[in-house]
Amino acid sequence: MSDMHLSDVTTLRERARQNVQNGAVTEGYGADRQEVIRLLNEALATELVCVLRYKRHYFMATGLRASVAAGEFLEHANQEAEHADKLAERIVQLGGEPEFNPDLLTRNSHAQYIAGNTLKEMVYEDLVAERIAIDSYREIIQYIGEKDPTTRRIFEDILAQEEEHADDMADILADL
Ligand SMILES: [Fe+2]
Ligand SMILES: [Fe+2]
Image 1 (spheres, helix red, strand yellow):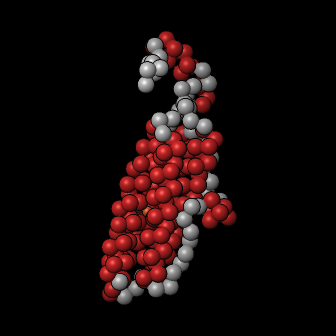
Image 2 (tube, rainbow, N blue to C red):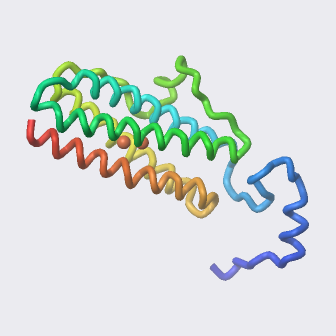
Image 3 (cartoon, rainbow, N blue to C red):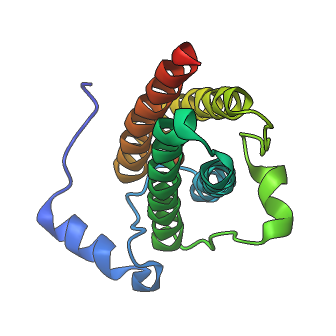
């Protein structure tokens, strides 16, 4: 881009001193902060609902045929919890508040909480939820674009892991 320029040192130093109470959010922050926080909170709700669903599936998957799936359910539950932590941390960095109110989780979440009865139903619902997360995170990454590279990178890292999760579930589903 031809109209791009780097700020000189004096400008950078002056800008950093303005609104110091905003912490990591500087004058150069290019995104709509409230909108990014809202998207982060929707993703946080999605991750927390996924933790609960995978936990339920982990404890409900019994029998010899379920042991491989159960191991994956537990691993995914723990990784979704890590995703939730990263999102909550970023919300605070941006001056927002992470929403952990259980009454709001299913409303804000992109993916659904579906318990599933059989092992096949559980794996199927997990695969659907992963595919929903993949689509919504990809859209969020496109929306953020160049405006907030840190938030975008967080979503890109999470997206890569959701794609692995979907792949894991698809593999297990094919064997059931
Ligand atoms: Fe996740
Ligand atoms: Fe996932």
